[in-house]
Length: 122
Length: 107
Image (cartoon, rainbow over all chains, first blue to last red; front, side, top):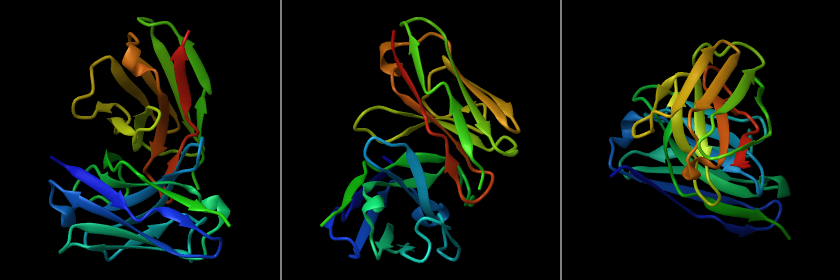
């Protein structure tokens, strides 16, 4: 079964850091681009960042550029999001999502994790 | 950045009726448009990609149409499990962007 499982969320103070992980199973992880998508409480979906299957190309939303870093370890089938200089407006459920087609970086998302909650508050 | 808009914000429909949801892009996204369904407390689920292709396991009552800047998701006969929020997403250009969503609720 194709599955994504996020972890690493929690409560952090403004200006703090957090690293999210997403463990993938059931598919050839290195063949697919992956993204992080977030959803603030009661709000819509916001794409945050994407990374190619090899990890050689990365993309960011302007709202997180320079503060967040996406990476992956294909030997561990795991996606990461390092979040620094966190702000209250970063409070959200963070989902990892798999690109629909192998080799495509900008794509629809056919598999989503269950999400991990990040709360930025003093 | 391509801005996605959706209308209406809320659609009240009776079970068994047809629902038509609209999505508009601020510039052409060709057919690189997806639709997702999200229920409370759940992750989004892919319904449609390529503007009109149903994802695996999606019932035939869901259909998508359009290209360029105007898109439509139609649910031909609403079932109880279809009451949810629906989002469109363009993946033609970076940054990838979502519409604000249409909530389909029970009339």
